[in-house]
Image 1 (cartoon, rainbow, N blue to C red):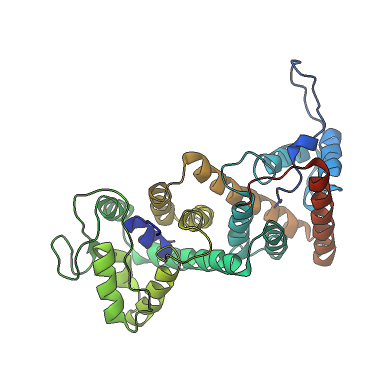
Image 2: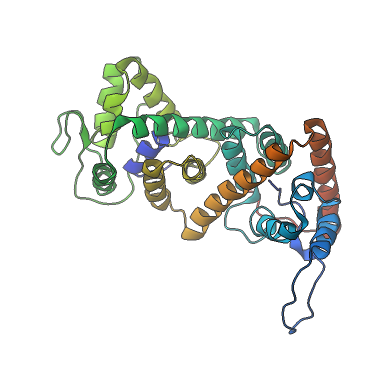
Length: 334
């Protein structure tokens, strides 16, 4: 059974390259025990050809003297065989970020890369829905006028409590704030699985599950609250998602970090920790957001031909699959 913090519920509302080619095949630029030598652009391009079969257009579009740094960024994130986040979920995070930039190039690349890593249609749909919810709630939070200190206090109070009883239970404000008991830890989200039929039901479920109605929800038209709450329940608060809760929360964090939304970032980091994410996993999710934005900027600014980019993507994936079979290397794909 999925265990989520009460905070994970709030951030559900508040809320390019594939790791096929393994660094085992990277040519060494230094001898063991020797002092590190400076990598030249030509050496970086040689590695790209050996690992990807080509120098990708999004790297060719960069000034030659910046290609080394960009290539190193790519190897350290998406092509890192020792990353804490499995390859499939890194690609799904990249897709969620790309979809709301929006970047047609990156959406295509991350979709193909995620599928090659075993992502199902359901998993792809879930991270896209999570990305959409994060952006939608960011708009409400930033436009609501709630100050950051009161928001943090509300999140912290929710983090320290476990939802109790139903509407009107001790410690549960009727509106405009979140109460809770003194018991800290994760909360089992015993939420009615069926969609709430109306706003009154949604409000009652929020009070029973979260300990109150989050302040920012007062700025959501009553007719819209039902849809937001039901969307919320169907993702991080659901026991039946294809993507584990932790990775949905990390997806939300990646999206909120580059929106940017300081409210969502604060809540997402707290929720990720409650869901069991390590600091390394949090940092990797942020790195995926960063590199996706980096290469999206280069691709769109350079006006790379999209059809040629799609052909290039297919060739890279084909080459790296063959390379994987040859070296017997595979990253975390779970």
